[in-house]
Image 1 (cartoon, helix red, strand yellow):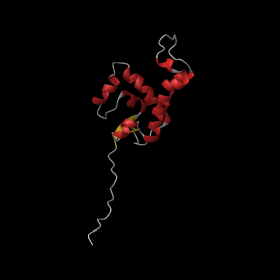
Image 2 (tube, rainbow, N blue to C red):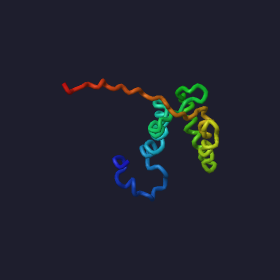
Image 3 (cartoon, rainbow, N blue to C red):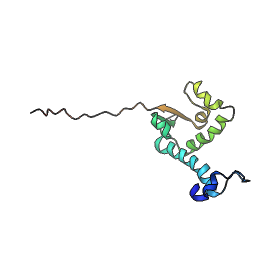
Image 4 (cartoon, helix red, strand yellow):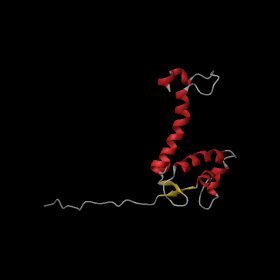
Length: 128
């Protein structure tokens, strides 16, 4: 943002509008939405979920999300957060650990327990 709007971007609190321009809107609003949905579609989770070996999958088939499900899940966060975050807290109550955003989109978060086998090289006796 500094490259586009200069140093004043970070200290200009007297603007009438919420957005300072096209790039402010794109980088502050559109990019996070597109990035999150892209991670869900491509890697079945955002970086935090990937670190914890969690995946966001279709609740019925266990397969990757469709584009519609990913968009619905993102919009479902609005519904889940509005009433005092009850839709997020619902994860702790629900038997399938689904928040309202998951229920609305037909998704579920699962733990990936698949482990990669480790191949060790044969121990070679170097004392000849």
